[in-house]
Amino acid sequence: QPQAVRTRTAELRDHARTLTPGGVHSNVRLAGPSVFFERGEGAWLYDVDGNGYVDYLLGQGPNFLGHASTRVNDAVARESRRGTIFGGQHVLENEAGELFLDTVGWAERVRFGLTGTEADQVALRLARAATGRTKFVRFEGTYHGWLDNVLVTAVDGKTAPASKGQLAHHLDDTYFLPFNDVDAVAATLSAHDDVAAVIVEPVMCNSAAIMPRDGYLQQLRRLCDRHGIVLIFDEVITGFRLALGGAAERFGVTPDLAVYGKAMAGGWPVSALAGSAALMDMFGGEVNHSGTFNSSVPACAAVIAALTTLREDPPYTRVEDHGMKLMAGIRELALRYDVPMRIQGLPMAFHVSFGDPSPIHDHSGLARLDLTRYAAFAQNLVSHGVWVAPRGIWYVSSAHGDRELAAALE
Ligand code: PLP
Image (tube, rainbow, N blue to C red; front, side, top):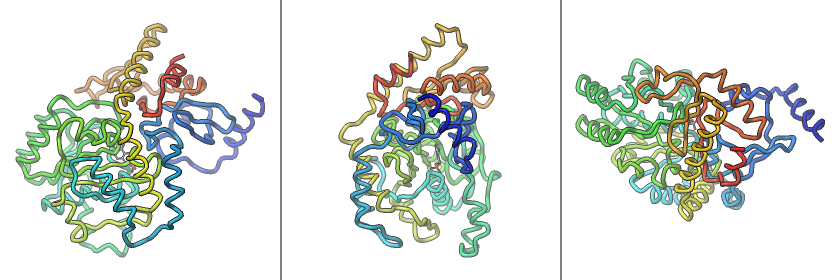
């Protein structure tokens, strides 16, 4: 019933008054006709008209295990019957924490939150409190969260003025350096003694897909040790996705603090800050942190089910294999149809782009995304049932099977 199909989507589009937050919305705009999803299953999304889409945003978001994991959803439903609590520790939180620490391997303490942004913010505050310094080293192209908290903290009348003071340093309080350039970090740390932390996406995954150069993370570790600086890994994307122990395990480098989110709870909203006991045990003193929905029972149940699933059947080799096949397939198609497309990155997250090397990512040679061309490309893919990322990055998840890949490449 193609007529009815068009009508339902069109009707919703014409009357929608609810705005979609987040980057995916720009994809909807880019892709032309809006799509209203009704449900997801495994690697697939289905819209209100029953059209299926292979989801290549899956792996970037929280659904690394695929949509609607029965195991995770059953655990959430079962444990939620115990009710939830506010303002105290639930035994399930402790269980989730133990499993989390055992899975990650290197960290001694963990604290659950709701968003990656929030956990990153707390990590930065801990670093300031631990070092007595205020500045941060950050890198071009890295993403650590949305500017959600600062203004709210400024207007609220409960936070102590001293704590507000901690937050009253903004962009001027960072050294903004190219990713993968260890000499720039070494020079900055030698010239300035006010750096509290270096914060890095160990594999740049959000605004681009760029691997760290060989030895880069080890060199950052050594520099931070030499200067008494806190090394923070933002593993919101890489955590549980590159390996059970994330980038820390994959590259054999232990940070002082690391932030997790997305893949850790099979689609449910949970983030985590993990780290050394010395830093994390500062909680409750100078640094505190709370949120109404942090460590909720459904969230902890989801963490336990998702991590158990990953531990029982680690999907990492499969993800790499699927990603390699997909990249090779897209390259072949680009050649066959003479499309000047570039594909760079790593199998779990790669960048499809048109255009010249980007000034932002010159050091990596990553191509700049020609948005107009990518929009046409994305629209074409969406109309053929392939749901792709707004800015040209494709993420492969453990739910993508060979059948889906073959369908995507047809
Ligand atoms: N850090 C990285 C690397 C991210 O990719 C994101 C989100 O996309 C965040 C932090 C922020 O996490 P959230 O959106 O849960 O606040």
